[in-house]
Length: 109
Image (tube, rainbow, N blue to C red; front, side, top):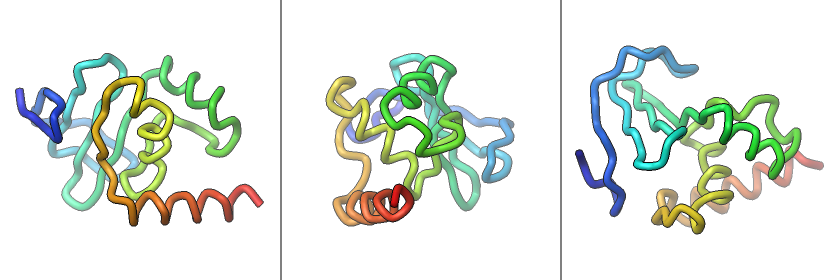
């Protein structure tokens, strides 16, 4: 068990293939259905079917699929939707958050 920004997570080697390549490590959060994968150059969240359905209800067709959320931007949507409810600390800097909001608003138009 490791502590990442105040959350106890299970840290383990991984052979899972992600959209960004083979994962080196995974971080399993204490609530079921959310795993953070890291690859040598990138990473993001993998959401269970349950969380994917909830994300679809919240954000509609903003994304084709909510199974994988890239760390650069789409991952922010998960923290936006569930951060307060799950007691998640701030995982993303204000600069990244602002960038994501700007990108999101451009895509919606």
